[in-house]
Length: 305
Ligand code: CP
Ligand code: NVA
Image (cartoon, rainbow, N blue to C red):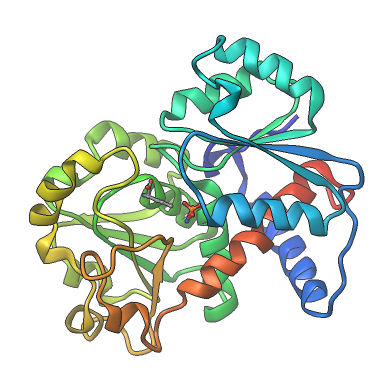
């Protein structure tokens, strides 16, 4: 039984295979074809935090594949009413897979340890693997190949950044992250990444110009993630020099794409001019969440496996 906690759970060959399934399903979807790869399968979507993209793209994608999605919010008492072990053991008797979004990464790992079905991380404070799969797929669509390309990260070295860094290692991309010193990965976190993907060419800097210089894609995310709302004002000051604006994009390669996982705080980490401009691919990224997750589900549970 497979779980997806971080992209370290997938080999490079498995990522390639999922991309091939994604491409096939996306092409068919554009022609109005829906392939029922998950007939009768029920997938629980268990969310401790808000979501538009993750929840709806999973629900819609599961519907396209002939399965059904069951949204579970706070009224399940998840993490409060009973132990995570009991919750996972019981819920997994009813469903074929659980997609879970939680504050703490340990919560999702603990659930997976006790579940009798596949568990997919739909975002934790540590990782957002489904986002990174969709993003790498988007770069592959637009840039043709991934091997040897560079992703330039500007901003907080957060869950999305960590997943992209591991993903880049798996697909042969370089990763350059520019963050203020206090928001860079700790030595322990860098050690975790390099242990998962020893082949990754990783550069960590405080200079946003260095991050974008060779990048095929310039990526940013909010300065305060869900759960860090109280730090928002402090972070706005600390990240003031890390806004992705026209001036910074002008330092990137001609034609570099602008990426953001969304939701964005316009006027903070990115200007309207950039996110609405010709280099922005944020809507394609959001659309690809659904296609890539259909690829992941079909690979994990379906006949395409
Ligand atoms: N990018 C992303 O995960 O968006 P949601 O929080 O809306 O799911
Ligand atoms: N880093 C953000 C990503 C949201 C999709 C957060 O965790 O809130």
